[in-house]
Image (cartoon, rainbow, N blue to C red; front, side):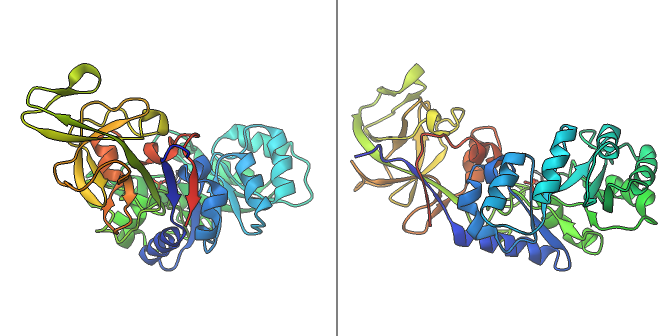
Length: 364
Ligand SMILES: *Cc1c(COP(=O)(O)O)cnc(C)c1O
């Protein structure tokens, strides 16, 4: 028998979450963000759940090729644009739209020989200071792009740094709008947090929203909201089984570094899942784990191939019992990936993307 760990991708939940994002911006088209292999879900595995999107956005040409191989004929957007001039030939061949975030990318376009002009998204750095043209250089870039025969329609784009925090989006939105109000073209502004947390402020301002994490069932502003409060559903479940049971007495310790000490008799379930499967090593005693769909707590340190769980809430559990590390148990109970990530000092994005190669994945 193979080691009992596996991940499940929930097709129906992907479709539900995409529809939920659409509801927050009913007049906008939706880019389903599938970078990083669909946030670790696998592009091919997530595709069925996401194919009601208006387009797919990603970073890697190889991922774009895989989408075309799945027979996706609709729009695909390269979120970081082209890395060198030859990428433009692939864009021409695969019909990819691409972001232009710097003058070097405009130079590449100007030197590019193409029959079909390219659809581009010109990105403004409205304050995040990652990719994009500074506000004061944006209009000159637009004018330069607009004069190129290689360029078809120009859309306008920016990205918010604080849509999920108290700082909010107002200053960046003001900057973007003041420099673009009289430019033609479609607008794309919102990631998941902006779409859900600032839906009203942005309702009439976006032609394309760009939800990623919400589509994968995670609250973009956790712990401010939970996934249930946003009416999202988990799209990835990581499950395993108990492969060993230990009976502790007061004073006994568990795992490396003896970081947990029993203060009385305690049954411990040993689970076939560790950090080499993508479970965060920084999760410590108290992190929630479902055993047979009942909330229990992890105790001691996460090791490479195992974690240990206090079985007090589930006296009937033992060898072979179902373990849900994140996602949905067979009785319907959920432990959210947000909670687990938070307990490990990180975010759900990282856990999804870090699901290890050795974990078999099934689609339901
Ligand atoms: C990743 C990404 C998104 C999606 O962000 P989420 O926080 O996952 O919704 C949107 N826009 C751009 C430019 C991105 O790189």
